[in-house]
Length: 412
Image (tube, rainbow, N blue to C red):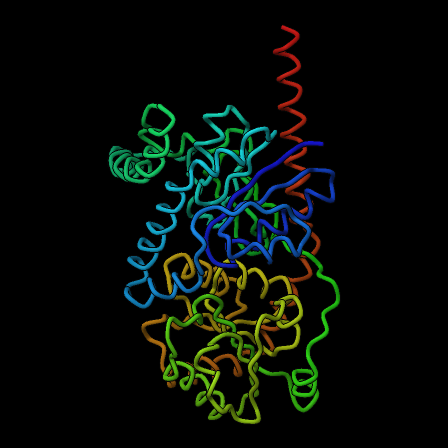
């Protein structure tokens, strides 16, 4: 049985794709270990996946909320978050190294977590990249200016990985791209949503979104009664962006008032501290941790933060969106929804107000039928791709190729 380890840091949306991939690998006979923040132990083990805690026992969604609350600029917010995650990765290298030992393959996440340790141990890697903008355009002819700027950026990006390499007596790299797998980089995005970049090397493969047809979900009686009582509700699901370091009643009230004024019924996910002692109108209900695979199918449209997971879920389950991106990568995912014609214009987090929410809902209502039809059409195409099964097929090819090379070397 082939042994695989993979690692990921971040909020639930950063963990979920690796859960889907782990389950499909296990179904195909692999022994999988998934390492992440200790707070995700239950989420991962409940899916039947072997878990290894990496880094301090913190509530990562709370930490992300604190960072976001201190920095309103989306670029700075992303950089601050990345710096926080990289620090954990650097300080956890011993744990990562020990998990990697004895494995046949390391699947390296979008943060390159595990790449240095795999390199030191001589274990082959496969990469996963969630943001297409992070994939290098190696086939593109570069100008002198491109090379100069690219080199400066590459050296900066390499710094945190070189700190880890130093621990193992490895020479520093000028470009962290050297750590990327030379065999396969999996991009779990649909070709029906994003066109493949012609400047990518062949090893960069868009497989389609990864998801799992989860077991049938039964909501509590209160939510069931709410759904039966009227027309389909709006789903407000801002993910980790609705996790509050402290109560944010003003933000919650923006949405509640906007829903009232536009006559929308609504299911609100998140804002747990604000909702705890907040009396919602009868046309709205709060829900906790409900699977998006069930929740999104109950709604008319979704208002979400455009994390990787919620963006993929709206496409997979064929529901239109009102995007409210908070950080830079979320703005990229919001643009994907707009380009596909399945969303309204995004509301940037800094522009969020009762008026901007009402305006977006009115735009959605005007064009709803068109957006809904496009979302359903894309959903059907996505389901034909079999994204996570395709990812495992490609991983199997890498493993077979690696085994053949090792047998050839041994025979030589």
